Image 1 (cartoon, rainbow over the protein chains, first blue to last red):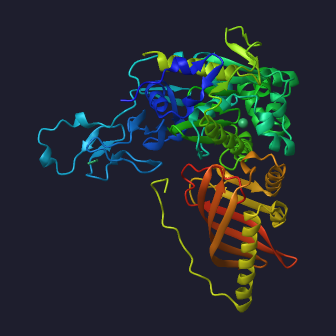
Image 2 (image 1 turned 180 degrees about the horizontal axis):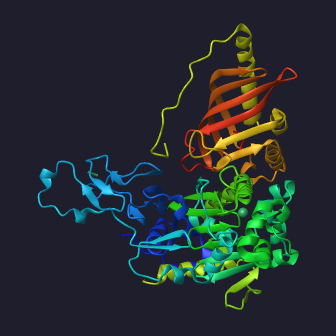
Image 3 (image 1 turned 90 degrees about the vertical axis):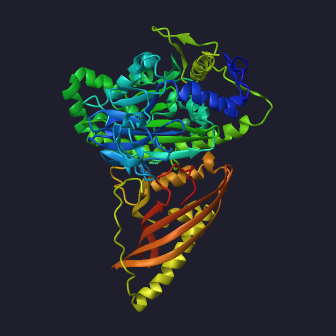
Length: 417
Length: 177
Ligand code: FES
Ligand SMILES: [Fe+2]
């Protein structure tokens, strides 16, 4: 058995040790203490709209079948036959009431129970209920967002989300019906880098000016101004590892509906009308000025204003970013533009994410170089303050968020030791 | 492949080519090899000038034929977005292409599918070897082209690149494919 890394020695308030990104033992500890324990985002109910729909999702490296089962419930099943362990379902999505294992043809209801055995004469007296599919023990759904936890007990999803839940509400307010409808399918972007480089970068406001300078230079948008010294936008550490850019101070300063989306209300007449109807003149204006949030829900759900990313570690040095355009129920004209912008910016060929991902890979190769050993997270340390709810905040380019992520990470990794 | 409900594609038999079309097929081949060379060598301006104003450059994700108007694609560029893509590459700060990928591609299985006046439907396979900072990557694609004769020169009107693994996680794809 490998010795356990000493996390207290590797994680300081404003710096972390490079080995956290490449040490196989650290990765195993993360699986145990993060991915197979805390709440992890799995999928959205709109991905399985009809009874008996299923999609293949994942919690860390483990594939999960998210099923709208025959009883009308959302189930999270493990894709492993309880007979001799064969991969049960080989497809990414479909609609079926049961799954039959191709190896010896055991058949399972889409809610997990064993319902049929081939040649049952060899199984006299067997209790079928002992051979149900493995299930993610806890499932919780927040306004359509499905989370799973492998820990039978622990904090509730609401406790886990804490005040970060408000950012999810802010996102959902952008729909006249208050709901997401993720119908555009996911791009899957593979990268040879540790997942924490991805996690930390999602709320890193120090990099856009340099990493995305090429696209900022050739396409006009209100985004570059968010990450300049004079920006009013904030970084916030919500606790529990959740971090955000609060862009609202900047958007409110400009005060124009849909400015955050680089457009005007007039250019989205159907959407503007639907929002007014749903929320009233005043509130709809506010929502359309504030826009959609930029929030990283620890450890794997990232809402980047107009996209949803789901971060999936597959090994210590390989990560997949699953990304799709946010689609707001009741907003067809807006959704079309959301898809177009998303396709331009993200995924393997995206104007933005191809460069972020290039940095992840260079970050990872850098971690393997042994001098200097430490990664520095001091930016904005001296000017960090607290908001009215006691959450740490700083300038949009400060490393408030990375420090917040590591504070929570250290807690998770050392709680039981 | 991703969905359980795979259907047998209907595949047309090769068309009989007229003598003029035989000659055109030769020109088309030369054109596709030329395009491949521009891409391999990152000749951005020359490549951009191959496109017509009504161009569509499409790299679908999650299957052979999803609806690009409703489903996410890796690339779904109109002419103006092709322009942005090229401009970004030319800033010299497109980090994923600084340094540039080293490339060589094989274009093969070139098929003349149909002619509609000045337009030609063509298919080909592409096998691309890429070497970059990350390492070596190979890419395989079934390509579909619509080419148009404009002032007696072939132009790209539509190019669809179906990566064979487009339903799986793929590495960054930032060179011209
Ligand atoms: S392993 Fe599935 S039926 Fe035997
Ligand atoms: Fe970025």
